[in-house]
Image (cartoon, rainbow, N blue to C red):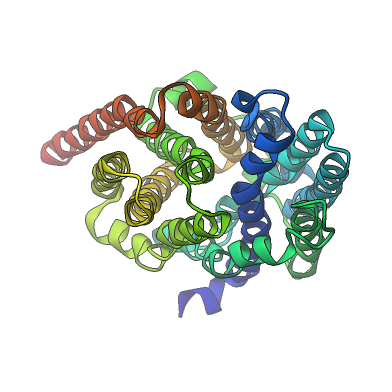
Length: 396
């Protein structure tokens, strides 16, 4: 199999992805609920998630440059240590019922996320161009194990320090972050290509004007923003609808399986049908998810809606990432990857900021309907790019 011949690092990064997502899912499941308890105003319940995303934005480019100069392993290890520290700060905030400290912990966790988001991009460093989609899919599939374990882990550890609820879960997040250092020790040392060492490349404006870059950024950012908007609000909406924390954890588990189980075949679909077709299918699936979720607040509707949300995200995110890796030259990689991740994180931050406020002010249906204009734009851009590719092919 291809990954046994040239994808050793992809396998290592898959293990890292599993550990990262196990911790992240604990955070996704519980951060809004902790915020609801200790925030001075319920509207601020998802503020810690938004601050995590802002920290991700601020640190995305510096971490990219650090990896380019010091290697992937250095950047990933620094991120894992930040995850451990951030989890401990969150524990302190929960014990003290101090919302400010809890927010600070999430800011530090943002450094971990900023580093870990490069796992999928690092996977393509040493594989043939025609297998980049499969390498990205393989690494993202690491979250499947996390999806099976993490929601239960969140429940098992939430009363570890009873009567202080949820502190044990964030302690578990800290331990998982430290554990990431084990597979990272097996990661191949990064050696820059001669082109990377020279630096330079085209001006960023010229790179951004490429139709493939526009399609890549719009699809990856739109798919991720819609997913974050709905996912962050889901535990809060479910508890407000008289479902239990256990029900919410189960729905988040189903959602994450929907996000990552398709990774086993998404890369092959992209190879066969092309990234634009898969991106367009993802936008349609996300629209279907919004309609299902908005239709009713029963447990079944939450489950089906969130599984579709995960599937649509998978198609749009992997298709966008695949197009991104085809849009730059070797000497442009660090700059372009940093810019792209910053753009995706910025859109996710806006979605995080809007999620809690939209839910509290207008309700669960409004959260889902808020995805409609974003998906309309992304689908339009994808169709425009696909039409341009067809015209070029006809003229060739």
